[in-house]
Amino acid sequence: QKWWGHTARIEYVACLGGGGENEVYASASYDATVRLWDARSKSKEPLMILDDAKDSVSCISSGGKGVAQ
Image 1 (cartoon, rainbow, N blue to C red):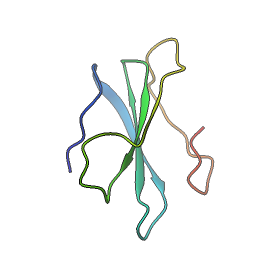
Image 2: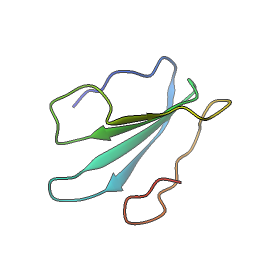
Image 3: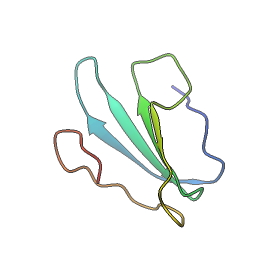
Image 4: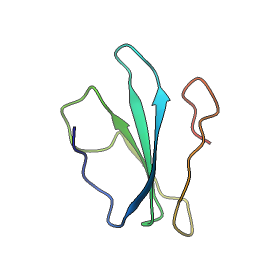
């Protein structure tokens, strides 16, 4: 599966889980965004774009039960 959207290098990718029919990944980038992706979808567009960061995002942590921190 290929996804599109970051405008700078991707620094980190994390599986937020979900299992079954809801497999969600998060990608962090030097473009100061985190994007959430549905691995089951055929869409190349993200589910959500988190753009509150003021600088590059180099790491993502899951708070358990699929909650990104």
